[in-house]
Image (cartoon, rainbow, N blue to C red; front, top):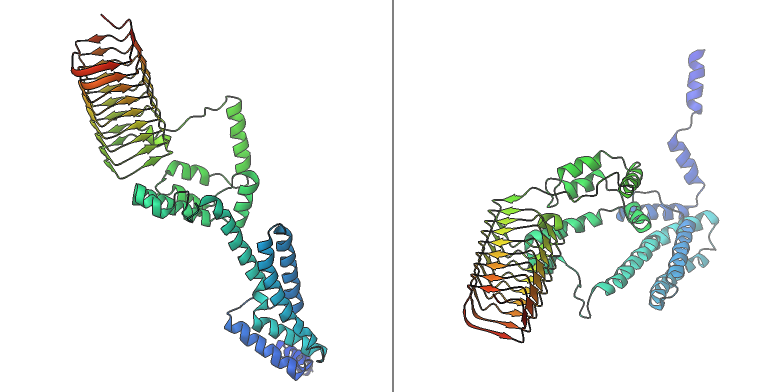
Length: 435
């Protein structure tokens, strides 16, 4: 008796297949053909997500068009571009008039097929891509010249100017920016900062990065994204209340590390490292102020110093060749036993910066006032001082050869045992400078 009951239950159970057959039976033959064609088209396009009904597709297109037109209502060019796409879509959609003669179920399936086969279902993505491309084009106008060349560092011009190493940094940062999610970009636009995920932290601070900092990597990994804003606010309050010191962390000194074809741009922490037994060649120093950055037994060759003030950093036993100092004030930077050739000082005042036993040639001082900076044992050749008033800076055992003072008043700066040859002073009055 029990077996007959279970068999009756099994006979009454409807499987998923029977439901599908029953559902398909409710469609007309034309509708079944349309559905099958739609499935084939979607398979050809490798679409795996569930298909949308044609009404939903049209609604998405209308909403996206309305959003874009509202956003770009003041730009006629954008309107014309999107109007063309929308008008083509409207012509595709007008096929509904021709399908009204079909029964309801057939019309639904054929509309789905027509929109899928004609590509109308991708219109929203096309609109968004066109909008993004146009915004990028408009944005780039502010960063390129009239010939379309970038006004910023790109991989190409950075490689030409600074070499492959610095170009690698740009590649790293470019990849990092591309890895930012939409949520992170929104946070950047709203708050000015965002929180990096573990992969991004590894990219920036990991061992394979030129910005490698294992300490920072471990520190930031130990802070959850939820608590990061509170941590930032807490640190700001501690600094404001003088309960936390705001210091620049100093890296280890560069010892026995020759530097070739490497530029230092906007890196004060690197410029503040002492350089010991590490020759520099073709390594410009730009926008990189330095504190305690000593240079010892490290020759400099073609190392221009541009807009990089230095303080409390001695230059000892380090010959300098063709390394101009421009817009870079110096303070407490003694130059000892460091001869120089082609070392012009331009718009670079210096104070408490004595030159000791450091012969120089081709080292003009132009528009660079100086004080309390004696020249002791510094014979000089072709080293005029032009428009650079100085005070309390005697010349001791420092004979000039083929040099001049031009429009260069000076005071309290006697010349002691420094009789050179072919030296003249032009419109350069002196006060209390004669022994």
